[in-house]
Length: 402
Ligand code: ACO
Image (cartoon, rainbow, N blue to C red):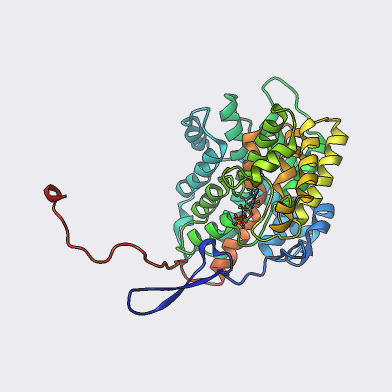
């Protein structure tokens, strides 16, 4: 609920809405979301149709430029992205400075932020439309390279350079998994599944990381710095980090004998801080349409790849038990997009601590579209107020008298 608080001791009123549960920060024409009905549309197109019929780069174009691309627009967009996949060789030196146990999200946000140094034109808030478009292309092109390199750094393997003969997901998979002196063939099932997951994560209106991108960008900071901030916001376990936490939770349940009910009870216990990861959503209070698509995709992909993963069964049991439990029914807690996404990533061979990186790869066009919209609308700098609850005025006490 919104409280009305005093702005100062004497005058002025201010709304206090912790977590911005009921406060809109902007008008936006990008993504429509109806949490009660479980509806999600990008630029008016149903997420179900986009996930089934389009490609990730088509969706990226749609989000960023407002319309589905024509054949020639799509080809040009693809060619431009392909031509910018390579990164400055000196960025490899930054990568090599990270210890191998660095979390890939920290590596990714740092490498993205380093683009401010390699392309300092991005610091100029009055850049032309063409210059901004080039930054957008650079981000879309280089993010998969950085993401794959963050993984290689963790593995202690040499990095792979982009293969511009491959499509967006194929190139990423090859940079991730190809090993020196071994032939690597992209599996079309894996590539198609990844493309679908990226589409499902591509935008989600004013969530924590997107709001971060907009608020950082509202100070006219560089687009690269704004996206880097978004990556950091996404990292937390209550946001994008939930996909990693879900798998860790399902693994823990499996190791503990597979008793889903025990963990359901733990999540309900108010003296226990444990939450059922991958459950609940700030906006969806009925179902998350992305979760429905992903659950079906998990069955399809694991089936096609011939992967039998016992934690998929535990996940289904947990979902069934929660959907029939009064605690979860009363609080309208349903599986969110991340409940099943980790199971697919795992089947694709992607390690757990790369899951949030995968989310960031998918969310990138959404962040870019939201940043662009905010700047084109000349939105004012984001600057929330507060209700002060600290000490009244006091006289300074010198150190020897404290
Ligand atoms: N398990 C158990 N109880 C839960 C859960 C959960 N996963 N989520 C919410 N609740 C309970 C809360 O304890 C609270 O109960 P109360 O009314 O008795 O105090 C009630 O449901 C409302 O929860 P809030 O935390 O107020 O809801 P909010 O909208 O602030 O939080 C959030 C949403 C952060 C997603 C929350 O549901 C959560 O922590 N889920 C687990 C983490 C997760 O899956 N995050 C991914 C979100 S989707 C995304 O970012 C892509």
